[in-house]
Image 1 (cartoon, helix red, strand yellow):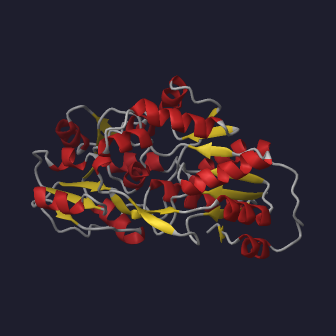
Image 2 (cartoon, helix red, strand yellow):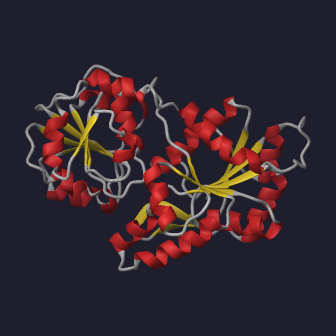
Length: 355
């Protein structure tokens, strides 16, 4: 199978959408799927208002049509609702090709946090976007129920995983007063980070990540340790060095960072909302409480080995197989030469091969 994934979220962005797509692509390739990405790369782009780290591509319909047609893909998955996703959707509808979508982000809530836009308006637009596809993949049962209540149809479950070889128990690299309470993620208003940093907690609060709110948060909470963006082994070592992972978000659809923390043996404290409730699923590896301070202090007593054992059950291979099960029924008869080299097709299409 040759699969095209159209996404506005791509490297060098660092977020859960990019991580999910990259890890899923790596696992899909081991299952015999040849995957390419249609991203903002190669298109004129402008910074997203209020969030300049994210670029909005000027993806013209004709350019996208030529790139997608040249690739001769068996299936198309549209991962985001931005300009690239819109252009790919328009092409598929015009050509009569089935496609799948995925719902990664509570965009209506994120937009409302920045501007007085009614949720009903944004959800109506998103419903129209996704319901045109053959299936919309969501990360949790709770999210599926919420979207179904808002009129979204053909919802399919696609959970997430964690790289337990990278994220693992390691010696501490943090020489800070204990206990160390850690947050990892994008420093933006929708992450509700101030709810964590304003807690009266013993020890040290550590923040890893970057984003538009970093300067304001550092000014408001000078006692916290801001370590900037970390990835790979450096990030794994920080997870493993902390004592509790605090996840204050009220709007995340999943939270891959939860699994990364758990894989390093780090218990979780979070609000009892969709996302954490689904990821932790009563496994007793975290504490969910409307009082985030109480949850953080209680989570310190959870055995680290229990957290690691739970994370070992969450593989990216399983996640990729769920994804593949949803796109496999849509595979159309391929018009490319199966014996032809995939690299040539990627070059013709001007696309990025899966990593």
